[in-house]
Image 1 (cartoon, rainbow, N blue to C red):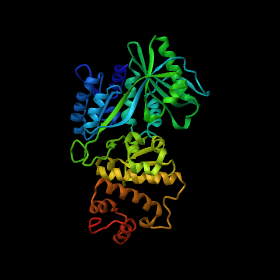
Image 2 (image 1 turned 60 degrees about the vertical axis):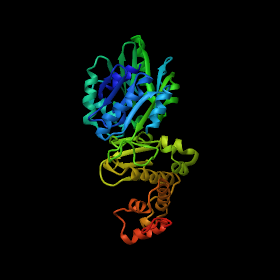
Image 3 (image 1 turned 30 degrees about the vertical axis):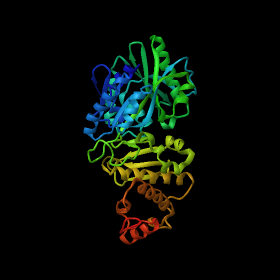
Image 4 (image 1 turned 135 degrees about the horizontal axis):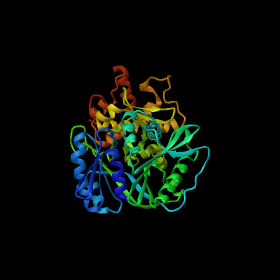
Length: 414
């Protein structure tokens, strides 16, 4: 079952093996951690996987991502002690019974056009077709592969959802199950899974799939007859912009600096923020639920981070995410999370009756950030440097610092 997964993703990225148990996936065109990670088929290979990931991924300015079995407690402790953080859990599921098609108005067939399948896949998983030139050639190769069947569901002549079925010996693995946003809640995914089950049974193969905790799809699959077999932990270790193998400060989070353009779950880009006390102070008991449902859009252009108040998501400048100071990005995320709470409370985020430096919603967000910056040990001078923004005049900036209780000239308490 593990080999089914490795061989499947080897069709999307390059796979290399160290011995028979440890592998490394890397991609020159797909920068997501999922396509750039190390894994092992045994607990004994965890240390080797981590060392290989660091050697290869840090060189390309990526976080080191390692996948190990949930049962490898000793290996996990060793990785945590060396600076890794658990950012997600992957559970391998097996189909235990028939999958009933739910909903109507759609049909499922084997895909024939790479552009159409790739377009639906990208809209389902990224909310954008920015990666079409990268994904379409991969899909074109998959359509010609004898061990792969690509399914698509159609509604009124439009591709509403996609699924990939990949075969190794007696196993059929389900991957890339996605529904185009406008066709969700119509039973499309159920129909695709039911058809995949029919194909697997006709070939005498066991149907399996994998799901990430961050995707919150466990209940969905359980209701369709899938049962958990085992789980794997996904751990990451950040590489600082300066080149050190660990962040300059122990932030306790993992930030995916080379994230792919488009929409992604917050927890996939910013791992571990649910454990930050400053974030828990924002959302309280709802922290995990809010962050699990929050989306992040990585986009090109100017700026840093901001809120998309139309869908309640966080927008991030890809260049800033890649090249910006890690501590500044960390503080910016906390700032925007305060805005997310304000948005959920129905507050006007950009009340034009106030200047930026006097606006209540901005001051509330910056107060949380200043407190966290001081907790991290930043000097008052460093806090002032962080707070500087190019669109504020010197006079307004001095008033801004006064509003926040920040001393521009001396360390606090000096």
